[in-house]
Length: 488
Image (spheres, rainbow, N blue to C red):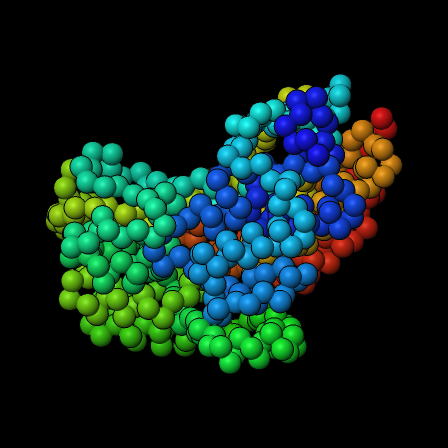
C-alpha cells in the first residue's frame, strides 16, 4: 500500500498513533479493512506515553487493566507500568497485530475538512495531504499543555519547563544542585516531586488546592512472579476482573462505604508527613472525586526532607529569578510547570470542518459534546476516541469500546458502499440531555473547586458518569436507527 500517493482515497485515516489509534487500526485489520493510514505527529508510536518524558512518569491504573483485552500475555515488570514500558507495549501491539506499517511518523495533522461533493475527508498533515472516506480522531485529551496565567511568567530568566515538554528522556542534569520551583499539585506533580527531590539543592512546591493522594502498591515483579504470571493466565484475568469491579463501584463516588474506606486510606497515606503543620496544609478540603484521584506512596514522604518546602500562599507574580507569593518571594533557578493539559479541547486542537464548513471549535464553544462521546452531527464519517465525557477508569478499556463502535460503523459504510453515515441531531440532543441529568447526579463534580473536569464555560466535559461495563453496553447497542445514511 502506497501511503503517500496523493491520488489515493483511503478507506480510513486515523489521527494519532497512541493506544487509541493503534487499537482502532488493529480492530480494522481484524475486520479485513487494511487501506488504513495512521498519521502521528511525533517520531514514534505511543501517543502521550511517547511524548511525555518527565522523571517519575508512570501509569496510575494497574498494568493488567491498562492493557488491551486481546493482548494480555505481555510480560509486565511491575504492577504499574512506567513510561518506557507503556511505549514498548503499544509498539509491540502494533507489530504483533500487523499495523505498524500503516503508521506515518512526523505527520502532525493541521486540518481535516469534509468535501461534500466527493464524500471524502481531506486531511492536511506535515507529511502531505490525504483523502479518506472516513476519519478516526485519536488525539485524546492530553495533547495541548496548559500554562498557568501568572503575571510575569514569561520573564523568568532560568529554565522554564512544562512537564509535557521535558528535555530528553527523564533528564535531570539541569536540575542538579539547583533551587527548583514546581507549580502544580496534581498527577504530574505527584510523580515528579519525589523523582527530582534527591538531585536538587532546594525544592519549593507551589500548591493551590490539596488533592487526595492514595497509596500505590507498585509491586515490582521478580523472576518467580513473572514466571508464575506467564504460566497461569488466570492470574491476570482475575486481577482484571477485580480492577474492573472496583472501577465500576467507584464510578459515581456515591458509594458511602467505599468513600469511607478511601478517605481512611488517603488520610493514612498523609500520615507519612511528619510535620503536623505541613500535613494540615496537604489535607484535602474537597470531596473524593472532585478532582482527579491520585496514587503515590512516595509523594508525601518527600516533604520530610529538609530541602523540600511546601508553599501554599497564592502566587502573585513571577520575576526573572523568583516566584512572588502573597506572603513573600522565593528565589528559584529553575521553574517547572506541572499544570497538565487543556483537557477540554479534544479533537478541536485540530482545525476540523464538517458539512457546510461547520467549524468543530465553534460548535464546542460552550463545551465539547458528542453522541456516546464518539461522533457528532454535521461531521459525517467522523469518529473520535477518548472524546467528550468518556474519561474514567482504565482509558484502554474505553478505547476498546469506542474503537469497536467506530470500526463497526465504518465497516457498515464500506460494506454498503455508502457515501456518508452521520448521526442525527435529534439523537445527539437526546443523548446529551440524558447525560447532563446523569452528570448532575454526581455530587463530587458539582462542588466549587472541581475545575479539572470542566470547559471554561463550567460544563463538565471530560467525565463519564457511567460505569465502564454500562458504557461498554451503550457502545454495543444496535443504534443504526440514530444515523442518517447517504447513498453514493
